[in-house]
Image 1 (cartoon, rainbow, N blue to C red):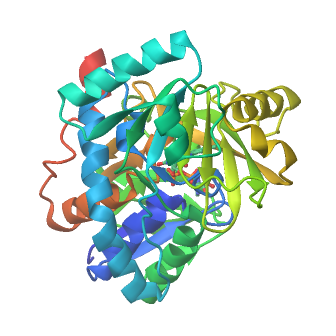
Image 2 (spheres, rainbow, N blue to C red; image 1 turned 180 degrees about the vertical axis):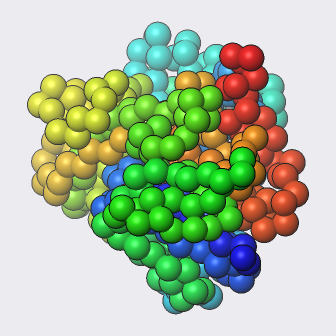
Length: 374
Ligand SMILES: Cc1cc2nc3c(=O)[nH]c(=O)nc-3n(C[C@H](O)[C@H](O)[C@H](O)COP(=O)(O)OP(=O)(O)OC[C@H]3O[C@@H](n4cnc5c(N)ncnc54)[C@H](O)[C@@H]3O)c2cc1C
């Protein structure tokens, strides 16, 4: 049998990996239980912000994210060639404002840490911050400015990926839920979908928050991924409020999109698979958003979206092979799945095609969890 790869899940991770494999001439099928591109990948804000996102402990993840951001221009060019749709990272820049002494001290620590590791960050006074983003509250006492962070239209990206994947010869099966992965002679041999066995040489688990529910996986290879609920509000920008920079205020971000939305996000909730928008979180986002940019008060509300981030136990992605031949994982991308799309797709497609593991993905495989319990 020639090599054939089945990808479970048609989110941004499954679609981009499938597209890269198909463009390398590999036989690929994606099985998606609902409609492709409607999970977390659709609800996401689309920030590509390794420098603003990073906490003190995440240095390995930060380097992975930064490498992925650098790959976005090549990714966009190839995607345009294969889909005819141009979706590019926009370098909007990002401002992190402080509104009181506590915020100021917290930001100072973040600033010092970033400066120490050589990131191009700038400290602004309150007045300077409002020159950069005039819609910021006059209460702003200081801010960090990050010029390099970017954002992308993730919804357009999903449309383009679907087209590109199929144009390159990939087969997409929507409304096809994979019930089980099957194995023979200690190797991966296929999946069961709609009570039928479909054979292949490689299976990639890219089921986002649902990855752990896929049947057939041995206990030690169940990806420890849980859903982390995120609610966002889509406001419609108008002349009363034309924010142009990404504002990452304490507990809320405001993200102007080129399609005219201003996204206010996002809640981070441990609520299992619940996807109902709730009054309390929406109230909190609006209140914190209004404190940072008071003129959002008069903006119309377009919609509210809810998505489930796939969070692993250590909040790092799970990407790579396993100790069962032909079984791969691309899940657990948590808050950075849109940002980590290019590096996941390029590095894992190369790995699957050549059998040579990826240096860039070292340390992010599922084996880190079974090494822990051994
Ligand atoms: C509110 C919010 C804001 C976010 N903002 C950002 C951001 O600004 N920047 C950023 O980088 N990231 C962001 N993220 C995170 C990002 O959205 C996720 O990390 C990313 O979308 C994960 O992609 P995925 O393909 O793994 O998951 P999903 O998009 O959820 O796709 C998984 C798919 O697998 C399918 N599936 C599951 N099980 C099966 C099965 N058994 N058979 C067939 N199909 C199956 C599901 O139906 C689903 O369509 C945000 C997330 C949320 C919720």
